[in-house]
Length: 193
Image (cartoon, rainbow, N blue to C red; front, side, top):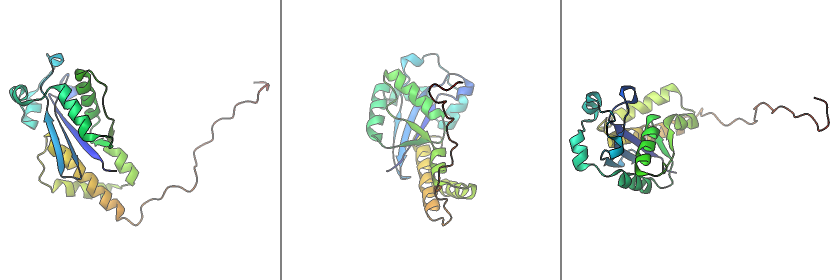
């Protein structure tokens, strides 16, 4: 099944105040992508905006007011574009910004965002393979700190990591036996405790 990668840009990082999502982008297979600018919701009035964040993503509040889409439209189109495919991000904050977006639209989050660690663990990737996949993704010409470019970068990283892991002859196999400790036994009925 194809993994969809996702990335949000926000008004600021949570360590700088109460942040809200301003752009969301998705990608698959490192290339195809889609992004939405998000018009600030009235419920986010008074939430924080930092010049540090703006200098990274390059988006202004004025541009979001002019070109951003309403939260209801963004969440509906995002859900439709993703469908039932698994969604992966490289930051746990992306799930928080999805929840903020969905909350403003008055709906529950329409998808679950997993973390890239899930893919790394599933593949059993080692540090050297991770670094190699990162270098391959870095060699691509994606616009970083914009939602679509960051989603494309993560998709390229996952695609490269899957290829590297598939080519590795010493890929760990699942254990032959389940060595999980047994659950404590319950005393027999009528036995003294």
